[in-house]
Image (tube, rainbow, N blue to C red):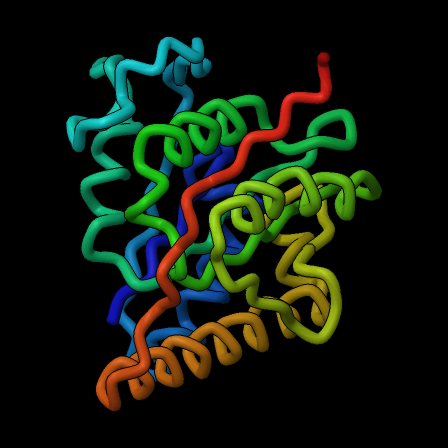
Length: 208
C-alpha cells in the first residue's frame, strides 16, 4: 500500500514539508510506503472548464505542469495527504489550482480512497484552509481521515514547527489513523467487500 503526500508549498523543505514528513514517518512505521511530491515554484494552470478531459483517460488537456503526472501516480496509490501553507486564511493558490484539475480530470482515480488535508500557519486561517482542501474529497466519495485535533502545525520556520509538539503529535496520529483505515479497506477487499456502485449523478438546475 502507498500514500502520496502532496507538498503545496513553494518551499521544498519548509513548514509544510516538515509536517508531511512527520505523517510519512508514522505511515512507514506501519508498513505503508510513502512518496512526498513537491509542487515547487513553477506555475500551475487553473482549470478553464473546457471539458476536454471528460470521457477519456488522457488526463488534463494541459501537459506543461505536474497535474497529469500526479493523476498517473494516483491510479496506483491507496491514499492521499494534501498539505499547504496558509495564505490570507486560505490554501496556496498553487495547490487549489492543482486539486481543481486533479479532481476534474482524474476523479475516478481518487474516489473511495482515504485522504486528509494538513496545513501550516504562523498563526491563524488554518481551519478555513483545511475546509477548502477537504471539500475536494467529500465531493468525490473519499473517506476523510482525522487526527486528535484539526490537522495543523504552527510556526514561521521548520524549526518553529519542530517545537510545536502538539502539532507534531497530530501529524503522527493522522499517519496512524490513515494506516489503520487503509488496512481495514484492504482487509475488506480481500473478503469481497468492494466500494459501492455509484448512482448516475443527478444535476438539479434551480433556474426555471
